[in-house]
Amino acid sequence: QVQLVESGGGLVQAGGSLRLSCSASRSIFSGSAMGWYRQAPGKQRELVARISTGGTTTYADSVKGRFTISRDNAKNTMYLQMNSLKPEDTAVYYCNLVIAFSGVQYWGQGTQVTVSS
Image (tube, one colour):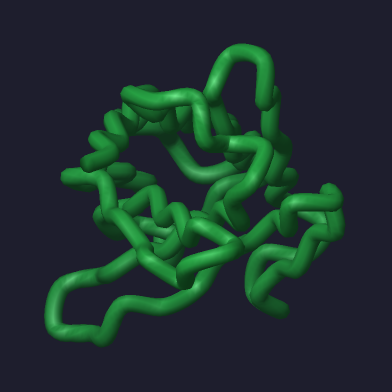
């Protein structure tokens, strides 16, 4: 079993920045693809960004150029640097991990990000 713990959410004004972190309870980062998803009230959960085991990154069009995903396998931690935040970025952000060889995935409990206008 793997536990993922997100941190770094909060309230910020439009145009501001936040950095989210996701830490895993076990040393499996290097063999896993990681991602950040978000879910706004009344909407489906959507992919924000993902990073492969090799470090290839993918972003939703809505966050390209503003958000940066990164990972530190030695620290079992993934990050999401969010700049130029907009009110429409308000959501609960979830960390996701998929173990490459098995496809088993895990989710964090979520962290709230609120951007005021």
